[in-house]
Image (cartoon, rainbow over all chains, first blue to last red; front, side):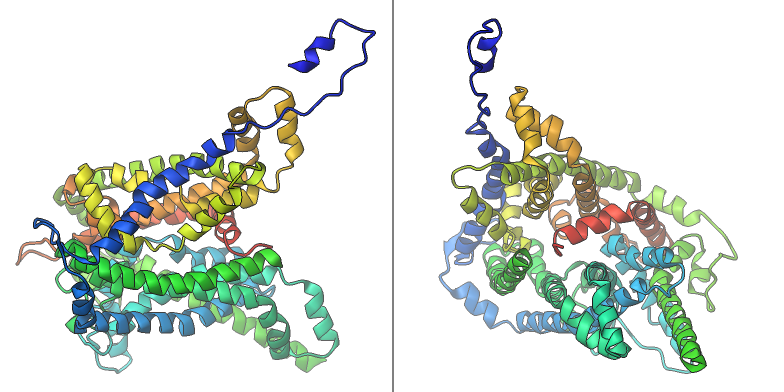
Length: 311
Length: 282
């Protein structure tokens, strides 16, 4: 230590104290675990997946070159396209049902006139932490054709019982029931944070200008929430694209895709081919398809993130 | 004006009414689940449904503990979630510190790489990672649920955002006092990062606790299963003719869900802070 030399010599001028420099290598050590783990467990498997997509490899057999035939088969498989259609349905329904509902929920939970606000927030946010598997088991019972609570209500109100899990027409709606239950609370957390960051003065100014409730919502709330709406939309789209737990449990292990695969999602299709049937090469082609779709969406999300940083 | 006052009262009433109805709908499946777990099968099916069971029974819980290795699933879930949380807290705060408080060659490129890595969906690596784990003979073990997920990019990003707000003078002062770089992390940064660590801990624990797709892919022996994987098989493997284990499944779902919901209500603030920190920068 340079500073200790001056201890005994009073006459000498005290040398300027220099800040000790940061260690050159420390930051590399600090950030390295991520890159090591990422390379071994994600980057390497990703590259491997790209190669796998061109191979015919079914667990026990030796891999053989398959060129584009995995992709030809995949794009020629009706069930695959069915799973793509179903997943698109989940995405669209989430976007147009869950996002507006979450905004309404956040506004209601943010209102000063609401009594027991903390209590209601706890109730409405409880689904966020609930295990998807557990709640899907519960919904499976509630949807039961003969004894389920939902049909009992419908019959009590004079309607006809619906075969929620066995009818091709309503299977997707049954899945959406869980999705709405699970996702609305999560998204409204983001909206609530957004609402709370809107300055009170904007509303006061609008009120002085004589704006009514709807006009205040239209001209103050919505424009201020624009980045949050974007962020939430991307989150819910990527989440719906990856939907797996809910339909898998709801329809059970015998027919995980529901009646005639009417509820089968892309990830369920991937899981069934890759882990269920051990068609490694084929399933990797499905994974790559999903990756391309999510990659495009993630680029949008990245821009949204950057937008936040620049604000 | 009297009319606008009445209008406001009606609005307030409507708001409270709608929130209450919605709240009941949201709570209903959870209430039904807990209630059904204490009912015999015929009462589970009965209409109108009872909230407090008429024929209160713990038979469902006894059946759950006798017919399925429920407590080993619980132990597995708990061990994995706790070990993963500890590892994630350590590695994300360390890396977040590195990115927030050091200038070093290549840090920008490394950081962009970190953000870019979040674009790889887990489903893309599901199959190759599964093959890799089989080769390592890591399937049916805790390792494959913990090691790959110990340094999540989003968590590092969250930590960096938080640590940027810690004044650099504190770090320089510690350095003048002769602290090592790791000593600075351990004695200065970690204590200051407590709020961010708390949020990270809750997020990580819950993520691990509720995780399903990956554990389902790599855990095949009953003894190695986590709760969601074990529960998912409960409705399938029952011999024909015996009573469907609806009550037992609801008992399992109750024991998985209710402790977590109670913990959540008590740490709601940290959890929500964690969720929003990663998204809405204010």
